Image (cartoon, rainbow, N blue to C red):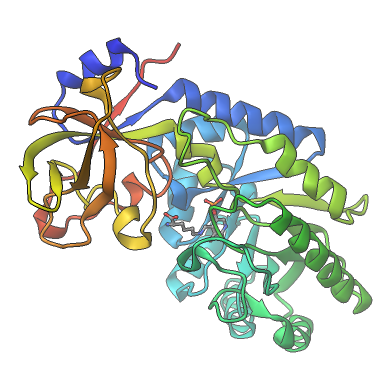
Length: 385
Ligand code: LLP
């Protein structure tokens, strides 16, 4: 919900831009940290959701670690002051260069996604005379009940080691003298709103932990990944229910006294703290459809074009006025999928009106592209209270 003051300020600025509400971000981070603390759970922020410096600084100050999926994310985390001992590195295709870089930084742990990757990390670590901590990312074949494009924990997905490869994995670990096994890692998908999914995950985590223990491995870390969804239909209901989320893991995970539970939340921490603010360039009234053409497109916010993702769209210049029109809200890019919403109910909209596309803090700015030689997307921060 934007105040009249916010809207007056936006009207002075060049659009489009991502607007970040830093007070809301702070509230969200504090709420998550407090809920995790109750159970002594550790949170590593999934940097891929948003690696804007201002956000990262706040996240680091909250005490969270960093979950990275590329060498450059590891580099960024270190540069932003995350301690190397709180950096984890996942990814199904880590290059030798990325592995070498992370080895040099002495990060906490590599989340390893295949038997072959174990062998490669071991070789590279041996060359450096280092001992390196690894967790095995297991594909638990648990359905996340989310959009199929953002499901990661099913047999058909490329991520993690499948259960039938675990014996080979255990054999390889025995051979790899430079590797120290610390635990098991899971991430079954993103934008998970049905918390029962996590109960199913816990059951699988317990089984896999036992599997390793029975073979003489000490499982110190249970990393259950991220995925907690946000309510895109209620962008003003802003802080996810971290208490309910963590409680599930407390209730359903068998955690021994010598074990740590790690989480990798991205979207839930940053998603609601931002809106993409755009201006109406043109209104085209067709026979079948009325179009609003914005100055922001899929180059600024890719999610609707890529996953048919829903983002609430508001005409903030006409706040409080009657909603009695329907428009397809589209961008200026030369692609038919450059559409933010079809048949969107809005106030009568005119050229120059400001449109807010809500809940864009996660996978928004960071997935922007230069297609059509578009400019870098601008960013505006709220003043902090
Ligand atoms: N850990 C790993 C290993 C991951 O791959 C991801 C996300 C996360 C943690 C964080 O998940 P989150 O808590 O943010 O759901 N671009 C898509 C989402 C892709 C998620 C990729 N992995 C979107 O816009 O919906």
